[in-house]
Image (tube, rainbow, N blue to C red; front, side):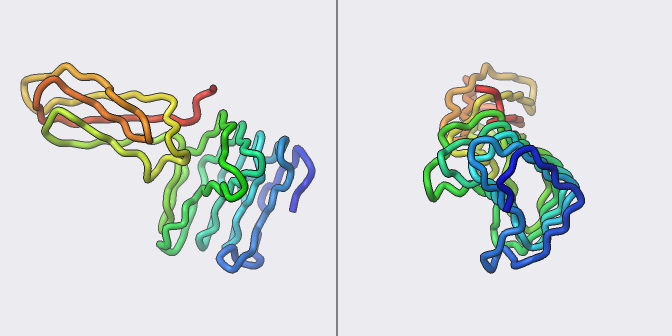
Length: 204
């Protein structure tokens, strides 16, 4: 358990009581000003738990056996958090690589949170920057990001492009971005590929 500020953990191998049995690898208990860096470490069946993290960086680490990162809401604050370039390996039980623990209160102050470029095998991937594509025929295109986006109903930026299969190219527009779904409409039926990028990490 860590209660101080501005610490860095590097090359740490946490191997203690497994998270699946109620254990924790590293517990960051300092709501308000976490200011921690955890890099190049090995979470061996044990997770990282951070209360209301502010300026927290976790990167280049390996999480084995459904070990993950839990962001725990005490006062609903998430600010300046980067979780990037990590590897996760699990047992196909649907465990999220980054989990929002909202048992005390929901997160309502969310700013500059970047979860990106992580890879997972046997676990549920979560991110704040996601790219998806779809192909089909019609006039309405609904791209659903709920399975991957970390925060519910919090798309701050959308970019999209279309690739028409055929000679005609329709007029098009975004109609809705609520509930982590992007709705694109065309003025006529067309067969095409739709490419969409969404971002939850933009500065408020």
